[in-house]
Image 1: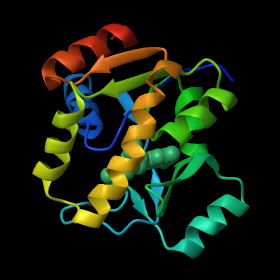
Image 2: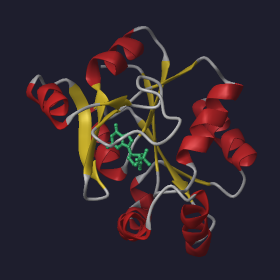
Image 3: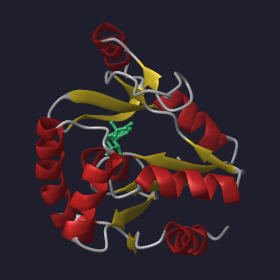
Image 4: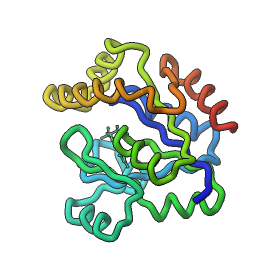
Length: 183
Ligand code: 5GP
């Protein structure tokens, strides 16, 4: 299927979400997919806006119906997936589609949609990544350890991506993305 799809991935706490939000503010015409997840909402997160927050049973139903473009267990615990119908519909309409997903998901999208542009958001360095994760204060020590463990593996996979954008400054990283996407 043809269509303009950009996958934005990268390790935990690198600021992928912030970069994608800033891109959307600058270019409201981009179409950002809302993922389904079994993770509990964080304070302030809205169902249908940040994620579709699902029970395990509801996520199982999506899987059984083959309604996910890709899905993965992230940080060894919760399941996350991209609703296929919404994304394929947006591609059909000619939207500029953005998926903010983890490395496992990025690989699945590459296999299913070979034309997808894969962008890896990288931290300036490892210490900065740790500092950002601790600084945002949304995970306890055990969750942070799990996320940093995942992050090490993800950083090692950066060269599988078409482009690497270093998030040293959100505005600058967005400039680079705007260029890559030809917006
Ligand atoms: P968080 O729980 O912090 O919102 O997200 C944890 C991780 O899940 C992030 O790395 C994010 O990119 C990833 N993620 C979010 N949605 C999806 C999805 O639909 N599929 C996959 N594979 N990963 C996702």
